[in-house]
Amino acid sequence: MSRLDSYSGKVMDLVGQVGDSLRTSLPGTTGKWLQTGAALGVARTGSRVVGNFIRRNPAVAVAAAVGAGAIWFAVHRHRNKQQAEGEVIEGKARRIEPRRTPRKTTTRRAPRAKSGAEE
Image (tube, rainbow, N blue to C red; front, top):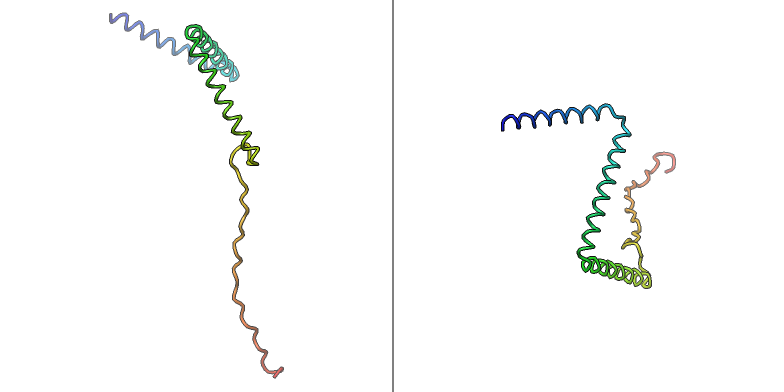
């Protein structure tokens, strides 16, 4: 058993070294292509799983479709009602008028009386 453990450890080290050398030797755009390929593979697998689920459970799929349609209809009616009442369609935003702070009044001194010549 110990020989198999040592072989599996050596194989894992070798795989790690190969992965590191590939990462360093590939140009930067290749990594993006690999990520895109992985994302496409995940999407394909997910669609296959969903397809199998729908084939095995058609009642659940029909119920989900009816529920989504009912939600869409309710949202559509709500927006139409808002539009008829004159409210904003895309949210609850309203304009807030800016307020100016009152100016600070400075205390003015009474003008000084000129001394001497005018009296």
